[in-house]
Image (cartoon, rainbow, N blue to C red):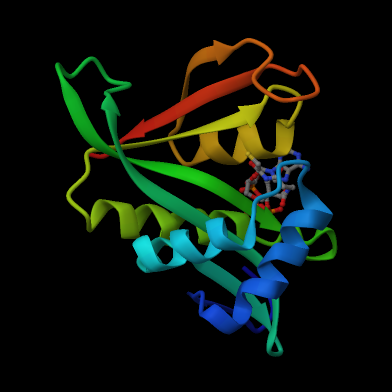
Length: 159
Ligand SMILES: CC(C)(COP(=O)(O)OP(=O)(O)OC[C@H]1O[C@@H](n2cnc3c(N)ncnc32)[C@H](O)[C@@H]1OP(=O)(O)O)[C@@H](O)C(=O)NCCC(=O)NCCS
């Protein structure tokens, strides 16, 4: 990563900027309450990238219970990357990667063995980033998005 970027936990005061970044970078948006509840439920995985006191990227994750993506029997506790984004002018400098690593570490600290996410099949930059972090494409979710695009379900099992 280049430049004096800081990777730190999100604070309540950062949420309006995080919501702005979400609006600018992704078609999937959420209510204020959703952002607030994710921050209070898993603050160690709600991370922002900051440059000169300006938030330029974020990741937010959840802990869920559900079927394993790695053939473990029964329900497991697992992480879910809900949303990750970096403002266009700050991309390709390692921020996405740094945010993912911090978010994943927060999920690992909650005694989970795996994490998963959904990503548009056309989103090459994000798919590559996830693959470089060790995520595997586990399935294709047909017409997952409102506009009809399919998603890849990608998952990472912790060592
Ligand atoms: C996906 C996103 C978060 C990546 O952020 P970033 O800060 O540019 O990512 P990084 O600089 O850390 O790059 C990490 C890896 O992603 C891949 N990558 C990033 N941008 C890429 C691009 N335009 N094309 C191909 N691969 C790309 C590379 O493998 C890169 O690793 P490398 O530099 O070692 O080769 C950013 O593109 C973004 O905010 N996109 C819009 C929001 C979005 O799509 N979020 C994901 C929703 S599931």
